[in-house]
Image (cartoon, rainbow, N blue to C red):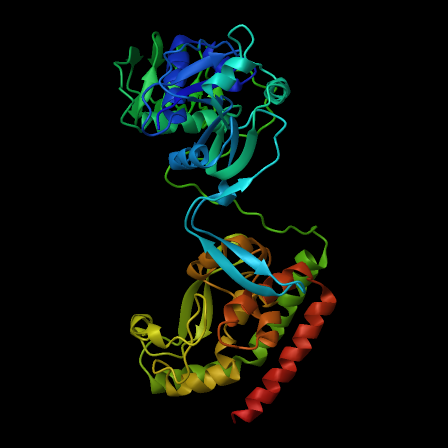
Length: 512
């Protein structure tokens, strides 16, 4: 289905105000906004300034799309066709939300807060939403309805006025939030990212630059206006825009930025991902290192934070250091005996190192005494059908990859003694969620941030409470790890510590 697409913008938006600074910036922002704001199969797109629009009977569609010019919202165009065809509505308002994009998971909770299961979504979701307080990212409106709410070829700039006129005319309205991503053009980050994507697209045609270069270095796509001088020793790394009457002094570096006309660049400056020479104090958003690409977006993290002098942050770490300084010397002779046994019974290194995610997602090498033969990971692919646990974990009884001494070390948990080195280095804690690799965490992205808000532990609530029931182990792992982070306290750690100690003593004497 074809639509007439309009982008509504105003002088309050940073991108619009930036256009007034110079022709090269204005033309580039206009083309970039037009390219990035359109749908993939669109050719014609128009800008509306201050609500002024020219609607005539030649519009080749019964529907018009109005886009909020402050944002570049990217959603699946097929969602628009679906909503128009399946809704008997005159006005459909859409807001893009990353949480509704495909390839995500939702957890299902029982009434007693136990994890019942999780559901994975492979397609964009559509959920009803209340009418917002400001213009949504997209407003789909029938052409006849749009003409009714206009006043002398002008769309109401205030969204509340637009809604009131729709209600007065008896138009049926629906509001949804759909899977998608947005880019805020009222921030430096949004504008720079939009320029990046436009410069990297096939739509961008590089023009001949008029500048004087005395030995300066230019890398990537750099667009320069007239009367630009790049002195010897200066470096410009694109995508970048350099406006008129700008001198880039020697020993200065411009990286992925926009330089406004007549801006004075200081010697030895390093300007990175910024709009230089333009006052935009009214924008209360910080510049962040972001990339706006339509195919993939980085996931934001929401780690739980604790005060500096809290038990979770200071007390717990102090106890970990003291305890590891006691355990490592006390068990040094056992380290030597186990290392000798491993070397005598199998070929390969004494320690096994595996990349795991720790506090705030930082990766580290989790240490264990090696309990398996070499190339165990390659053999695991052949044993995949015999996996006895659910989720991303792998475990089978009588695993043929485990060595003779390795089976004893696993049964007595002595293989985990080297992890006290990880504790001393600040990579782990005595008590905490199970250390897990990136691959496993990717299966539970919505709960990963809670688990990674604390250091992983040698023991934890899941290790004590798990039932190992078929089809329940993965859910219990997520449930008990997130429960531990939620209720983290000194009393809980003491309880887990003594319960684990008692369990290990019984287990050790059982396998002697």
